[in-house]
Image (cartoon, rainbow, N blue to C red; front, side):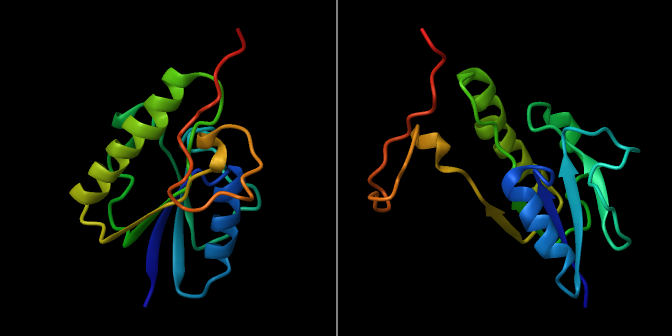
Length: 142
């Protein structure tokens, strides 16, 4: 039995590692989404048979249409990290909502969302316990 998984942020820090693990797992056929490379180009280096790449931009929900068709699960690793609060909200909040809506529309039964500690500001975060951190995204310099 083959399990088809959509992985967002497949060229990013976390997503590239998730994609590598998925490609190495027997019975898993990943679909890798990136916003950095348009469809038709090789989005992921060292492309191997058994997976596909798709273009999708969380800042443009229309590009997500069809991305979840035929997949069993979504592993959402894409995020916007930086000092532009408007872009971060567009991608991380509205884009994630649009991705979940597309997954639900497509009948996806599982969604896993991986995020970053950067939403809490500058680390380190070694002494934090779950639920103790306040969101504090980076702000542009004054």
